[in-house]
Each structure stands twice: as C-alpha cells, then as structure tokens.
Amino acid sequence: MAASPTTLRLTLHVWRQAGPERPGGFEVHHLAEVSVDMSFLEMLDILNEQLLSQGRDPFCFDHDCREGICGMCSLVINGQVHGPEAEITTCQLHMRHFADGDTIVIEPFRARALPVVRDLVVDRSALDRIIAAGGYISTDAGSAPEANALPVSTAVADEAMDAAACIGCAGCVAACPNASAMLFTAAKVSHLALLPQGAPERDRRALAMVERMDDEGFGGCTNERECQAACPKAVSVAHIARLNREFLRSSVLGRS
Amino acid sequence: MLDRLRRALGSSIGSKALMACTGLLLIGFLIAHLAGNLLLYADSEGRAFDAYASTLENSPLLPAAEAGLALLFCVHIVLAVRVQRANREARDVAYRARSSHGARTPGSATMVATGVIVLLFLLAHLYDFRINRPDGDSLALIVRERLASPSGLAVYSIGVAALGLHLTHALRSALQTLGLHRPGYEGLIDKASLLLGIVLGLAFWSFPLVFFLGGAA
Image (cartoon, rainbow over all chains, first blue to last red; front, side, top):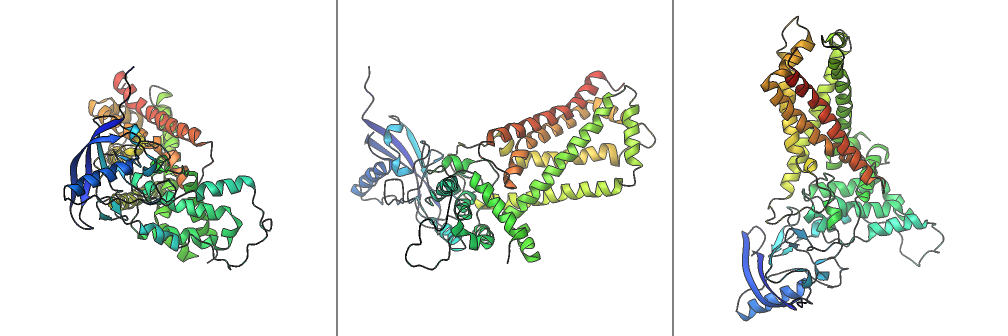
C-alpha cells in the first residue's frame, strides 16, 4: 500500500491588491514542501517567509486566535468560503484536505460593503455598524441578577445560543450570491428576540439594523441558503425567517 | 405608524415581502387561469370554454379584476428590478472561482432571466388573445389555431418552460421571506415548491403540445 505523501507541492493563485480603490490581480506562487499537518494559515506563513527571503512583499491576510472562535480569518479558497470543509474557519483547515500538485485559488471576501484593505484583508467594520444600530440590550450594569428571576426554557435558550454562536466572520456575506448580510443581522436579531432581556428594544431593533444593513450596501436575501452552508458555526436560515418576521411585525405593529 | 410602513416598503425586506405577497397572489391567478383553460379539453367544439370566456367578458367585475392583475404584475416586476439592481451592486468584483454549496437550484439561479422571459411571453400572450383578437370568432377556435401553429408551439413552450422554472423557487422563497419557516419542514416546502413549478409548467405546456400534435380541429 502506497503511503500518502507527507508533503505537498502546490501552485497558489493569490489575490494581490496594494490598497482600497487600487487595481488588484492574481499572483502565481509555487511551494515545494508543504506539510500535510500544517493549517492553511501556516501554509500562507510559509509562503510569506519565502517571499520575505526573496526580498518581496508578503501577502496580508487576517488572523488572530487560530482556534476557530474569533472570526478574524477569512479567505475564499477555490470558490469556497473558509475552504472545502464544512463548519470550520480557515485557521481550522488543514493541508491534508489538499492533494499533491493541487492548484489553489485564494481570494478575499468580495462585497462592496467589505472593501479590500490590502491583498486578502477586507474591512468588516460595516458589520460592527449594523450591531451598533441595535444589536445590543440597554441595561443598568450592576451585580448579576438572580438567575431564576427571568425564566427561559431550555428549547428557547438553545435556539438563542445557536444564533449567538455567530462569530461575525462575514463568511455569509462572502458566500451569498448577492453579498447579503442577512444571516449575520438575523443571528443577532434572532438571539435577542428570543430572550426576555431583548424584549424592551424589540420594536426598533430589527428596523434599525436592517436600515443600517441596506445603507451599508449589502444585497438582499434570495433564499438560496449559501450562507448557511458556508457558516463556520452552522447558523441556520431559520433565523433569517425570524428576522423577516421581526421586521414585518415591528413595521406594522411596533410602537414608535 | 405610516412613516414606519413607508420606510419598511423602501427597505430590502419590505420590498421582498411585497414581492412575495404579489407573487403568491399571481400563483393563485395562474391556478384559476389553468382551471379555465382546462375547459378547452371539455368538448371538441370549444363550447364550454367559449361559455366560460363570455361569462368572464360580460362580468361587470372584469375591468376591476384586470386592473388588479395588472397592478400585481407591475408591483412584482418593479420591485424585482429594484431588488436585483441592489443585489448586483452589492458585489462589485466577481469571484474568479465560485461554487455553490447551499440550496441554489437551476430555478433560483435563473429567477431574473426566467422573469424577463415570462414578461416577454406575457406581452406576446396578451397580443395574441387580447390586443390582436379577431372579432366575433369563437375564442376556443382562435386559441387552438394559434397553439397549433409552429410559431405558437415555440412561443408558448418557451414561455411556460420559463414560467415553470421560475415557479420552482417561488413558493419556498416567498414563504421564507414572509418569515413562515419551521425547522424540519424545509425539505417538504422545497419539494412542494419544486412540484408546483413542474405541475403548473407541464399543465400549461399540455395546451400547445396537444393542439399542435392534434391539429386545430
């Protein structure tokens, strides 16, 4: 039985862009000995070391915790957000999922609302502005209230937790055919709509967040569930349905 | 309150909710239209269909119904153009490699193209039987003659194929947009949506096919 290779030779087509509003294009690079045990980001580290040793500019890419919880890493790898494995971030992707001799196309998340800062780094602050428009609860800080003062059933708590699992990576926007931020916005609206703590601001939350989302230049949902398939935390489009309900209910019945 | 409604209708979700409502009402119209058309099969002289047509034409409610239908179509189309423009603009640089891993279907990926074809088909259809209709003749006869011609077969086959494909994504998309989603029922709604498109498409296709193959008489 032939042993599977422990190192890979790869051809990389990587997006290079000097800055926002600057023209971009793909550069082709070759890596000779990529360990199958490396993560995808470690492979990019090797590429950057190689470029630095040649006196060339390394590629900029986002990363932080490298353990799948911070939401910083991005990338569209061979047309797939966060690469070919389901429910993981790019930092959790390992090179054993690629074959010796593979060509890999690496692109930034593409959306007008997420402009390229440089190379593979995009500006995701539009998502922060959607949250700032209403994705919070206003409450007096102080000592923690008695845990049983606000009863929440297990089923509701579980559903709210599923929505709250969103790490804000913008993978949903990148995967959406319309670059829509509906799943991201829905996750926060749904999370807070399910819980009693979110109730006081419920009537204005969905309206304000959707208005901000539209103003930022994100597209609209055409219900093709690409976002759900790309989400590293498997946030369901059921939350988009709840966002739609919240929005329509608040528009018609909400108190000003 | 009114300000909220106005802003809601200007938003992406409000536009799509209105598209969903008009779309569902248009599906209702299609089912009624199909039921009326099936009278063409009731007898070979077309008496049942002509009686039905003359009842409709003599109804005092017809102008209001036609105006309502025109309004439904116009709202659905105008909002589709607005939503589609925003969606196009939202991704200014295309991906070099792009693959689908969600629930993108031939129907969902071609909603705009099939929508445009259905609009052109609707105009041709109105021209055939409403604008350019010869006076005095039996409508059933006019329909059969038109559908029995090679150009009739071509135009009506393309038109109803686009309509059927458009409808395969219609129901599931409209229900989700209106927030009618229940975990566990996704698969069922997908199947119902697909079935609706196929059944309505095939049922409407049967008319040009039957009259072309069988001849006008």
